[in-house]
Image (cartoon, rainbow, N blue to C red):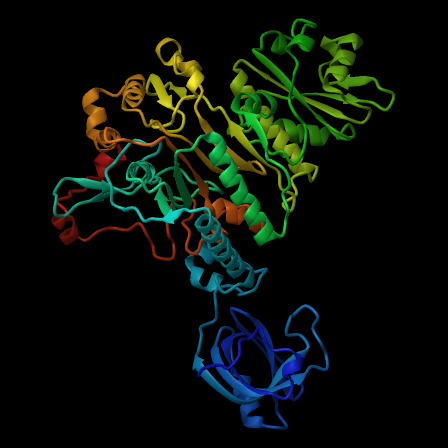
Length: 589
């Protein structure tokens, strides 16, 4: 055998034993007539000792070892004279009497240590080396533990794990499809699933009752820290349930994961907030509830109460109160103003008011307002001496709220209020059923065309569809949407109505969704579901800012795999087999 023990398991109780270890050389150190080697594998690090007086030839071989050499040693476990409290194996070392180099290594392009000197692009190019780092490996171990606990929980709840196909037909789901040409059907294409939405609904029609799948999904969209072109969903569907049943089931799963993985007990039901309230109070459908700074609308307080045209002409004026920040310098205020003016945020400016120690208010718009108005502002904001009031206004209430949301999150970061070891979860419910698309000049489904409207809003489908609320729900953790779902439409007539509102002709609806509509005619049960984002859950549990480090082989921000150099070109022979012709000029247009 190559090893009798791993590099992370030996302790003082093993002293005197002869063992065989194998792994990678982390580092070597020569001290007088002694050479020390740190040997690493997935399980930990063990210190090896080579004594020149005892075996000079063996010590000379050890001195030739380089970083990341793969070696095997045989030696005796002994107590270390200088113990390392930072290592689980720090009380012992191995006095080596046999060394075998299993594989030499080139000098790695970056240090294989927790605090590496490798940049993102370099680490992604050599991802197989990056994965040797203990902190990156720990993320994958965490991911494994989470998937195991998910399967245990759902199995206990009566769910069946069922695989669905990766090569399906293209259906509109809100993002671009990745498409796959068919060789045996020239000129036709499969699509990679953005989610198994219609397939899991068919499983409900088939009587499977409770389904789940930890499944790859694909969306051809611009990337960001919490988005990859291929991502993993914990996809679930249930029959004969309402929204409350689903919320209880998956709130229970979240609590189970926090308890078993993080040792955190989440007591009591999660907060629930309507989409309307979330947007009004926090400017986001995924509010970070780890801290306050709830929006206060100030139209009645400031509009028309002075000669400040910006406020007098606005459709929305809102503010947040940053406790203890009245001491902010002019430079800090300029930084905040520049922040909200960034193109991706888009505010035209920022108004502030400081509450002084004596209770008076000093503002950047003092010359437009008297002390009475400023005191009314202080009262409306519930601001105390030492607090800083920050105000944003705009011609579009929704845009202004989103700008104020970005400012709120920035202040949360600056004040250290977004602690990664603190968890605030909530359900956002009662989403709008539709949203208006300026590009398409029509109503679009906020979630997808199969979402069931709230029962009491169904009559509005004929009179005011824009006012209809969806029987939909998102789970939010620390300002991140970790899962979402809805009750589905199971009535063919209601589904036809939905397609009509969304602008589908009867022919197009039949062409794209006929298989599902036909299935509904054979007794579809009431059903609904939820999909959790596994990558996002793992990144939250690991305290990461990006999902990339909890994925074994992620893409970069240009959707490229720099290690495999993908996507790449196809040879002409392959293009011919697929009946494809590439026109780069046409693509560029």
